Image 1 (cartoon, helix red, strand yellow):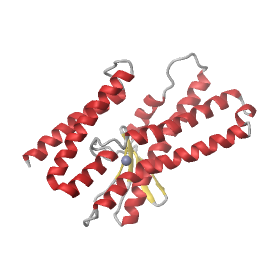
Image 2 (cartoon, helix red, strand yellow):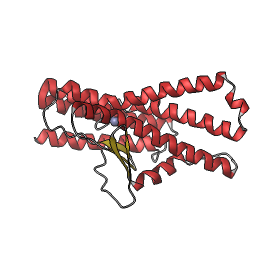
Image 3 (tube, rainbow, N blue to C red):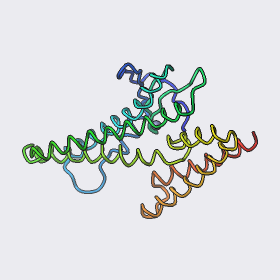
Image 4 (cartoon, rainbow, N blue to C red):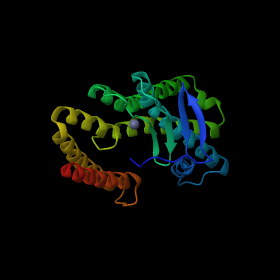
Amino acid sequence: MFGEFAPTPQDVYFRVLGIPCRIHPSFWIIAALFAFPRGGHLPGSIVVGLLLSRMTCLFVSILVHELGHALLIDRVGFPTSITLHACGGYAVYQPTRSVRPSVSMAISFAGPLAGFILYGIVCGIEYLLLRNDVFLRIPRASAYILLDAIGQLKYINLYWGLINLLPVFPLDGGQITRTWMGARWGIDGVRQSLVISMIVAGAAALWFYQENGHQMLDFPVLLFGMLCYQSFQAYQEVRRY
Ligand SMILES: [Zn+2]
């Protein structure tokens, strides 16, 4: 969606479950901006605690999502790696032989699915913590940060997982729609999937604009406005083709 992020000397490299991962420095900057606690008059130590815990939640959630894609790509037999960057992340997927549309669709769905599984695990942990009165037994500041982290993990993995499944290109839902319609109706199907993408992205931008207090500079409004325009551009290109 946002192109490749070229390697820099500040990149951090590691491996998870055999998959090579890289963190581009832009990831930390944007993650800190998103994670910074707004509003209220909180003590400095809680602000720092919330910031670090929310950045960790973002990191874990995006990594788990991309791992969902990457583990299936690896299993299908293609080389892959994960990059986390300013606008989220991506798992490299360049098939070296033709794959069935159902396999491509499964690879697209594996990311949100991994997030839904993490959501289920977090709900289970929350239930156990509440049942054992853990929040009442630990210091209040820690309980506050832990509750916030649970809320963040649930919100990112369920809410954004579902939004990611909207038929908007190049979100995972848009990839699934395009693969399915392309396999069924060829180039006509691809063109129609881009029309759907344009309409749904435009409607989502308007919906978020209404919901979030009529602010043009709201993140989802900007995101879906841009995706609507990108779909329109892609549509023009496919029409020419
Ligand atoms: Zn994805």
